[in-house]
Length: 209
Image (cartoon, rainbow, N blue to C red; front, top):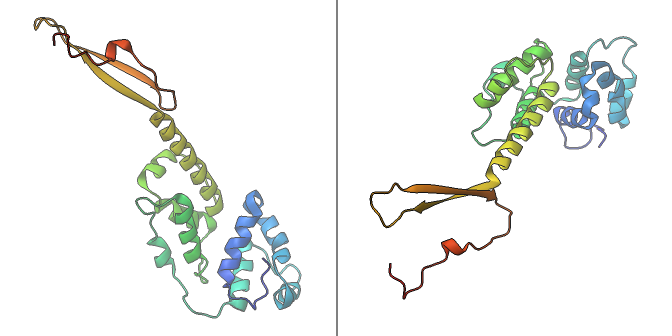
C-alpha cells in the first residue's frame, strides 16, 4: 500500500513494510533510495519530488528526512530502548526482528551506522543462535534477519528429522536366572505402518507362565 500521509499508518510502519516488500533488493542501498518514490502517493510523493537534486546521499539520510516531515512526535524511542530489546524464550526470530525494527523506526535521532544497529540486533538474539552464527559477517539488520531466519529453519528441520524415528525397548529374559538379560531395540520411522510380530504376541492362558 502506498503512503499518502492521510491514513493511520505512522512513517516508520510504512518504512518497515517497504523494506519487506523489496525482498533481496533491500540489501542494496542505492535501490532502496531509487525505488522509495514508488511507495509514495499524493502530497507525500510531491514532497519527495521536491527534494533538491543530490540532496540525498544515504538511506539513513532519506529516512530521517521522511520522519522529520511526516512524524507527529509521539512515542519517540531512544538508542537505550533499542539496546534493551531481547528475543523471548519461545519467540520466533521473525517476531523478534519485527519488534526490534519497530523500535528502531521510532529512533529518529540515531547517529550510529547500520553495522552498529545490526550488532545491537545480534546481541539481542537467543544464545544458541549467536553461537551458531559465530564468525558470520553481516553489515545490515536486514542481512542478519535473512540469515537468522534461514538458520532457524534449518535447525527446526533437523529437530523434526530426529523426531521422525521412535524406538521400543524389549527385555528378553530366559527362564534361567544365570543368563544375562538382553535388550533389543527396534527403530523405524514414525510414519511407517504398524505390523505384528509373533514373538511379541500375548501368551495364551493355558500355557505355563
